Image 1: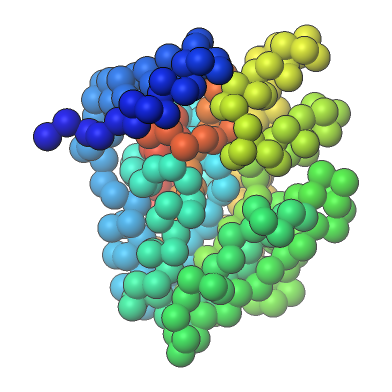
Image 2 (image 1 turned 60 degrees about the vertical axis):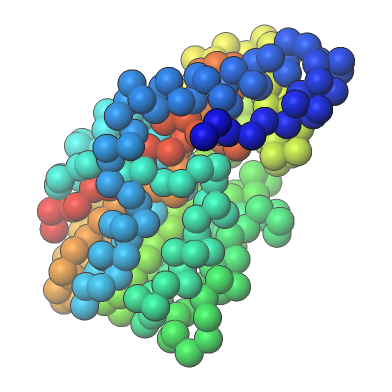
Length: 289
């Protein structure tokens, strides 16, 4: 059966932005499918199934990096962490596409969730809203403090909250990095902050156009993203060292991500509503503790 296309909508888009409309159709209906086939995306285990299996364990620690694409993580992690790394496939297009269902499963109970929220309420993930009652799920929100101008939570602030509150043995720790804003390049982040916050509601090439306008090379974005990733990995190493001292015998410790990121491929940045492997293939690292 062939997918249903919005022919009328495509025709209207052609009148307004012919180049953009054709590019959008190619990415959504051809390039995405081709890249997923070449990357063997359908052969990778589902993030949801891995998550449910983890929840069934008596004691677990799940560490979530927001926005960590697999290839970037693979290049950077082994300087800071050791373990068995596999690829996991998250459903497109973004966290809200799968998280409400995942956090409502019956296995999701008796969990403490440390969540690095951001300064824009509409962009926060309302974990507590997805969990049915009587599940004994405690959400510990961590608000922006030292980086309030960037509206983000630093990884050190997450670690501080974890150490102050303590762990229960069934824990999820959700960092804000390597997601934009890139705290390692504050100048660039502030230049792009407004456009990034609106990226769900504007044409997908908005960031590319802004970078061209500012004469900023794409390599600077890539470096900022990798810098954010390395920064959070350093703090995860610190967290793992802390975990070794608390006396909790976790059955499994995992580092993963909720989705990936576009770093200029196809003229796209951040994460839009596309089924592309850069966005849907994420790390699932079983950490050696």
